[in-house]
Image (cartoon, rainbow, N blue to C red):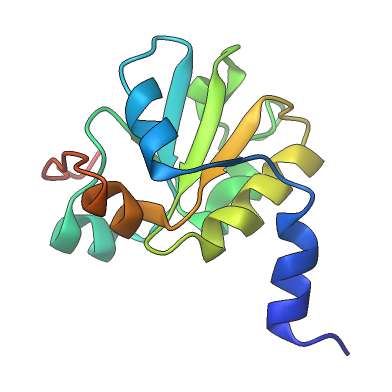
Length: 129
């Protein structure tokens, strides 16, 4: 059995990565959709990137496929999807999953929301959808 750090490292080589500075530069672009994959309690406590969509990591397999009864319509757009979590580990897994489910134009923010804030990124309060 592979240990978690080896598994995560092997997956991270397969997914596009965006650092926090690059994410800030692209934040206002209309062709990008930031997707917060953290759980609701994390969003309520820490906020989220302004304008980001929310899709918990555990729901991606249901929310991405267009033929799923639980599909999120925003995943059907032609935008680039940039996934993030708190530290950047779950978003590596989420980006890999999204690729496997057919999303081609994806990336994740290395260092997650913590790196975003350290780079000067804004946070907004999350209001349950």
